[in-house]
Image 1 (cartoon, rainbow, N blue to C red):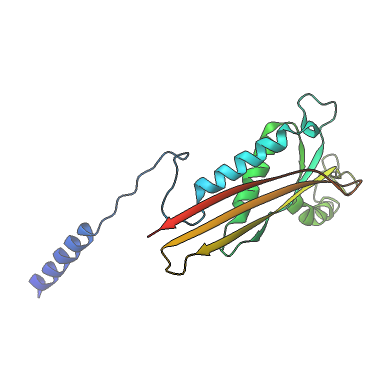
Image 2 (cartoon, rainbow, N blue to C red):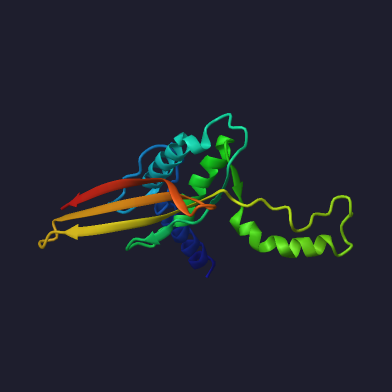
Length: 192
């Protein structure tokens, strides 16, 4: 019996070691080419292009007397794919914040701050450090956008063309006018 258990353990160990995988770190900026679908290389390219373009806008010039206040809404996914659009929006927001030229309103925190103000007023927080409502900053601009795609395949299914487009626009809150807009396109072709 002991021999059978030992043999079973030895076979299991040999099987597991034969099926082993290795995982390596790669250059985070290296292009990822696995298939025709949207990937991290596409996301980085779009986010970097759009972020740099918005920061080149005269609205966000370096050295301005007053930093404009911006709210970034999540880009709407209107593609045929389930994409992590939050990563795209976060990357754009991060690039804008890191520029130091813009103040960015935290749209998500706005939903939780009222309960935090209530806690501050509850007597559990030192009154000298307590914060309350009425001091938040209103955005001057709202950044929003759409992510769309189109797919075209030949009838013999030998060629597939996928076209992605991300369009962002910046709206002046006081006027309701679009003061900046840009799109970024990617076209991928898969041939069999």
